[in-house]
Length: 158
Image (cartoon, rainbow, N blue to C red; front, side, top):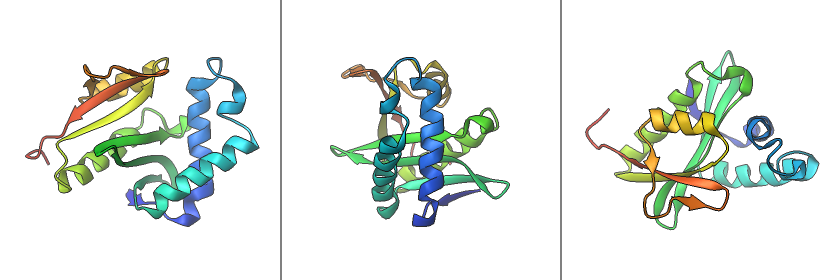
């Protein structure tokens, strides 16, 4: 089941975010940038704002949050800012369901293109996005340590 997040979900959302990020950042960036109490507080605060704006979706499985996604306009462009699945729920369709819900929301808003940034060393996520139609942004292929991808949102696909 996909639903909008609420303030009661923030601790779980932050935990899912940190657990997922640790799988691809560990060994590539300093641990304090993705783990620890300071990062947990920063992460929770950031998600709190997105939840308040109604821009966070949760995928529930067996009564628990198994994945999360956040999106919104950045510089006028619809941006998938986060999509994380609990590592113990990978390869079970959670990410695909979240992705489809985001695309459906964008389509309902009349969005025709979206962007995202993915950590250049996160090959698993890159493969996921490629499977779902995302392609490299030829105008701006990188943003620091991240690759920039674009998605054309087909208004006729349901």
